Image (cartoon, rainbow, N blue to C red):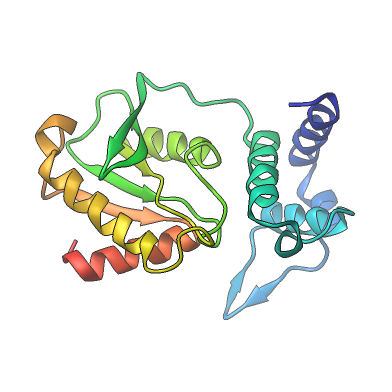
Length: 202
């Protein structure tokens, strides 16, 4: 990170440690929709992002949007969770990253990152995958599907289904039970996970 980005990261960490009452002042009134209230920290980050003078993501273009997301995630990720094994590999001819916690169960979560099918990759979602692996006590396999606009729909779905099938075929190599492979993700990745489940009866 640049010196300016390091300062921003320190500021984010300081904000995260503020009392909830102060965070609420920064975030504004609670945002509730369909009976669900947005998490206070998430709302504060959204509010601060809107105050940023840079153009909105839809005006920055894919390359700049991807770069900015990586910078943002580095600033708010906090201290990296160390795991016994984190390694890059190839799944269905695409990059992937395997996270193995202490004493893992025979289950595996095939994770698809979010980012509107345009931004996001293995690095932007490294921190949540580490957290998921540690908290769940299971292997997490993050999969880097092709993104738009270079690869429009249904290319991401084709990749995601291919990844699930490849993981099942390679379950022995990955040390997992082929009947205990789950799919999940955030935002666009959650949509892909739902579609994979429908297509494969996962």
